[in-house]
Length: 110
Image (tube, rainbow, N blue to C red; front, side, top):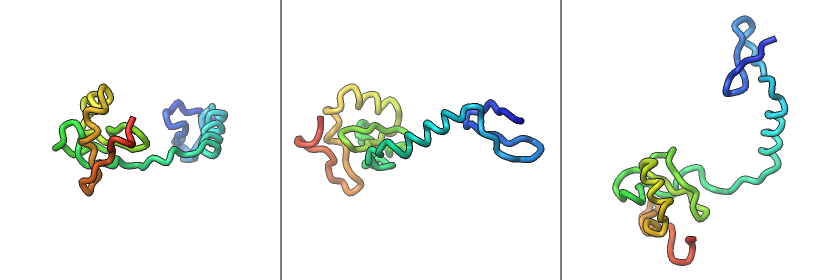
């Protein structure tokens, strides 16, 4: 029997190329239960904005974002994300949808 030590929890053995689950079946059961029981947040998979609200000219990196006020806000880099988190109100007026409309106004942000 093969007990792989992989991050993904499965591995191929060299002989039969069958997938063997890791020694943590309860982890997989827990993950499955969490997926089925807990509701999704409803947040979009992509940022609502195309340009970084901190630099206002750089395109957003799809891997750098913050979920703020029910909206996924994208940033060009981690430094800009940190700057936004330090004082969101300073940058909210720069968060614009792809059509140029403001995402946050005085009535819908924290």
